[in-house]
Amino acid sequence: MTENEISYQIRSAIYEVYFALGPGLLESSYEFALKHELETRGLNVKAQVKLSLNYKDVIWEDAYRIDY
Image 1 (cartoon, one colour):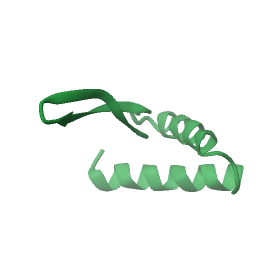
Image 2: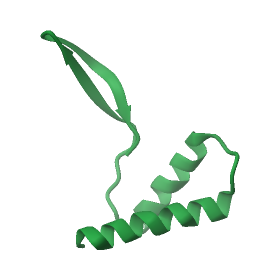
Image 3: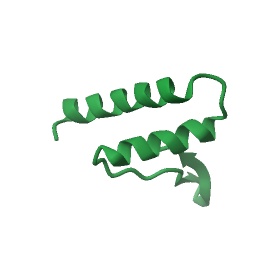
Image 4: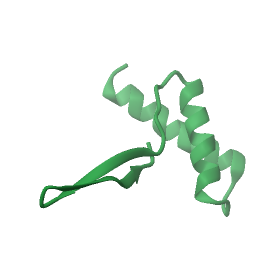
């Protein structure tokens, strides 16, 4: 897939989830549904990926979590 095709799949998945679930739910509900929608479209998705923080040679292993 090209970058434009991937971008189209992501944007259309977002719209699909929003129209199916509507507004007002917790973020975790949308995250679950979007991950499922992207995977059904053939995209390889990882959710809640840990990212470390290095501050003056001290490493905090799970300082951040990246949504996707």
